[in-house]
Image 1 (cartoon, helix red, strand yellow):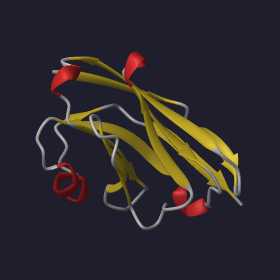
Image 2 (tube, one colour; image 1 turned 180 degrees about the vertical axis):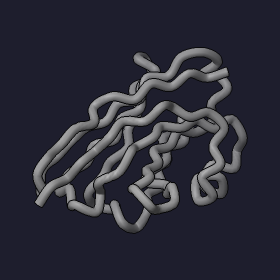
Image 3 (cartoon, one colour; image 1 turned 90 degrees about the vertical axis):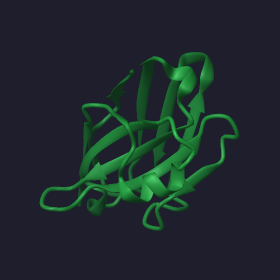
Image 4 (cartoon, helix red, strand yellow; image 1 turned 120 degrees about the vertical axis):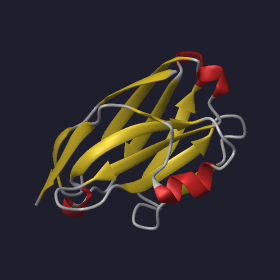
Length: 126
């Protein structure tokens, strides 16, 4: 079991920045990849960014490329999502998730990671 706790959400004006954190605990040695997902009101959950924990290879949704950066600190068992140039359409509940299998990208696209946090809300105003 992997336990995930997100933090760092809040309200910001368009063009601003936020950094989300996801602290992982439990059987984190078996985690192959970590990801950030988001769900806006009335919309389906979508993948935002993912990172392979060993290679640190990253994957991003087209909508956030060049603006968001996912990174990890293995010593702290923490994954971050640095969000710059935020837009009102980035407003959503953001979730951290972990996956043990090797199908990181496939499961990222399908939103099917195994372990999930409770989420942190991000609101971007005009």
